[in-house]
Length: 130
Image (spheres, rainbow, N blue to C red):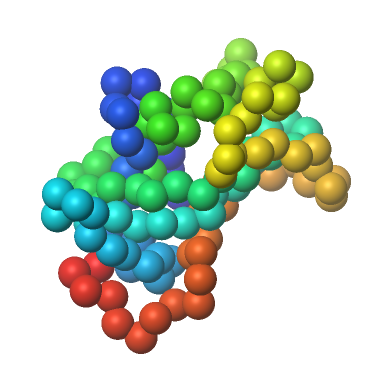
C-alpha cells in the first residue's frame, strides 16, 4: 500500500480500488462527494498513530492513500532522516492530539512499517458507487 503525505491538500484521499479491495464502507457527503470512513494505523519506530478518518474517494491518485492536513496538522508526524518511516512524536504532540487521533507505544516487538487501514464496521452487503 503506497501513501503520500500532501501538506497542500486539506483532505485525506483514498483510491476507489483500495476502497473496493478492503471493502471499506462509503457514504456521500453534503456536496455529493463520496467518503470512505476507516480506522487508520500509521506505525512509528516504537509505536503508532491511530486515527479514524473520512477519506475523499478520488480517482487518479498517484498512491493508494494521500494523507492531507486533516491528518498531518494534528498528528505532526516526523519522518526519519532516510524518509523510510516515522519517528516517535514529541511528547507535546502526543499530549495534545485531538479526538479521533491518538498515539500509543508499541505493544509487540515489530519493526514493520506498513500502514494499516481497516473498515470501521462489518461490511454491508451493498456499496453504492464504490
